[in-house]
Image (tube, rainbow, N blue to C red; front, side, top):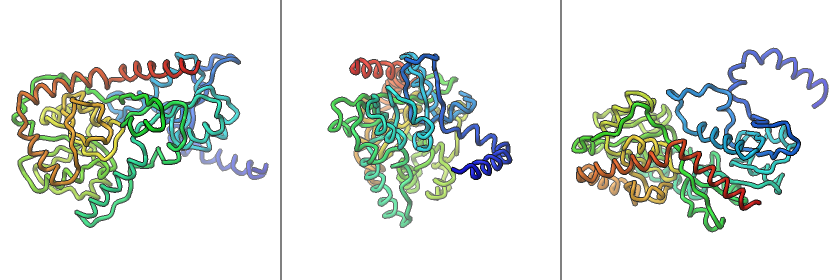
Length: 393
């Protein structure tokens, strides 16, 4: 950039920067020198994830994502291990120009920045963090769902979830280590060991696990999500509920784009709440009405909608091999996503034995309380990192 060009840009920036002040704060691309102790010999780590949570107020009562808590714990644990930490956004490759002079001992994360920096610094210990299933699996399964949606409704929809953060180029490289939230088997041919970790979930601070009238609630299913509604199977559930009146579907988190795409019918057994704060009384009332949390998603890295539901005692109903297999006997697994099969399974679930539902709900709640709280995530991540660093020494 020439001196004249630089002066022009400086003048323009001085004129407009205060007009965009809130955007400047929340869209910062990187955070540098976390836990720096002013030592020449301190090890340096780079995290490729999402830095913007460091530039906003975190309100436990209203925040809608669990990711910031996991990021804060990752930073906390790396600090405990003595690292000075830089944090950059997963796909903001311009940030690499700012940090390219730093030499890292450890590079953690995913995305385009992770791929490029590990190639630029091959001597650094690379830890690939995979919060979704393998992208080839995700693309293939989402394409099947889009084709099936078109087959039924003659409306085309595009890929919405797959490839946003993980591409086939990202996974083609074999890094030093991998930590996965989804199905570890999808990476077992490439890695001798795949570390697995559960995500966290939200827990309403007023929730108390108690006896439920499953005779009524077993006919009520909660779909908890946000965008990518075909990927997450909401279209399938709506098609089923459109043809019957004996089962009620409660929908939380459906965004305007998804609502328009699905053309949700006005029926008493399809209840669309829009966005619902997990920490609200309204969410607790929905939980009280339902026995099941159903998510016929084609591919997940153990969706936080399911971990959150389980923390409130709802029994998860999910597709086998889509990212939830580690739940084992703490979930009800579906073998197919087609309407006829799902319709039959919903009927069976709605007639489930009451004592079995009571026992399973309690079992699910206890499992979730042990594995999906942020304290459990911190403990497991620390254990994994300790083992990784031990292998390095």
